[in-house]
Length: 72
Image 1 (cartoon, rainbow, N blue to C red):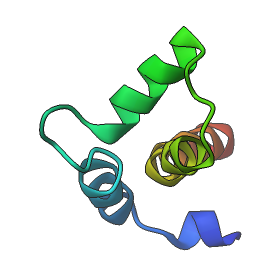
Image 2: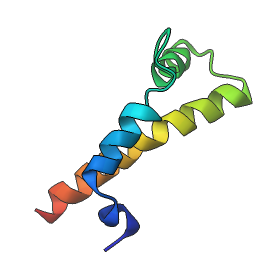
Image 3: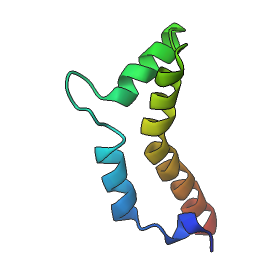
């Protein structure tokens, strides 16, 4: 059992909805950074850090879902 398996789904969902989407106005940070990445404008270190920081909860959810699917 890894640490990912020990994190409960409600915590993962809470992380995705708060840290993964914050700040909410004018648009979620992760969405802004993904648009910058697609446009090729993601160059500054702070923008790359923001993408990683706000993307971590979503990556955790993805990894947890894949692990749960494989164990079932």
